Amino acid sequence: MIKAMYTAAAGMTAQQTEVDVIANNLANVNTAGFKKSMTHFEDLLYLTLTQPGAAMRSGTGISGLQIGSGARLMGTTKTHTQGVIAQTGNFLDMAIQGDGFFEIEGPVGERFYTRDGHFTKDANGELVTAGGYRLIPSITVPQEATQISITKDGTVSYQLNDTNPQIGQVTLVRFVNPAGLSSEGGNLFRATAASGDPQTVIPGQEGAGQILQGAIERSNVDVANELIQLILAQRAFEVNSKAIKTSDEMLNTTNNLTR
Image 1 (cartoon, one colour):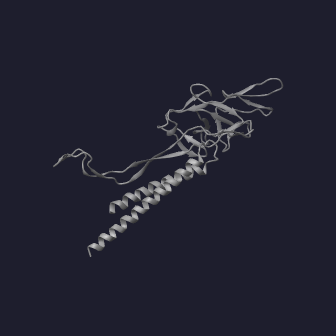
Image 2 (cartoon, rainbow, N blue to C red):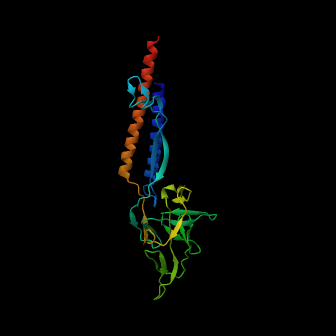
């Protein structure tokens, strides 16, 4: 019965972590380019009283006798499914329809990656994120530019009289395992050994997605599904707490028998 308490407590801890992850998903339901997280649990070590297949007086055991010790969080992974594309009317906003990330330069030259395509111009006319991080490769919008055009393959041009001079090329970065990227906050990811090396590609080529101008990608969080998972986690937490209470009552009954 003491073991049951520890096992149920492990289950409560696991469900509390599940609620923490769901809460973060719901909190970012309106965050541009946000990718929801999923939890992965594993069962703990088993107390083996009889090994399955062990020799017994009546023959060979079939099922054995093993008692588990609960569950624990094995890890969380980002689900990089496509979010809803929303029109913004801002000609500098870009949404990725398909696979890929924008490459961003951090304040000390480090490289980050994002699906948040809300860009603005800094004092020098360069395209930067809302946090002021520069888009890579750098694209500078001339002061005299009256209308910016970004094609599906990332070609950036502007209208000047009767001409359309090109001012840059938006590229995307792909990873063998996007789920291995490290979330850094601020809608940014960092490459890791698990994600693989970044591969720079032209939008629409080599499996990369296309660029949609004047739009951004919304979060891929499904509120209805998250609420269902939240209810399931709450019920599982309550059942585990009930198991602790039941074990305590049984232990009290046992103690009273010995008096």
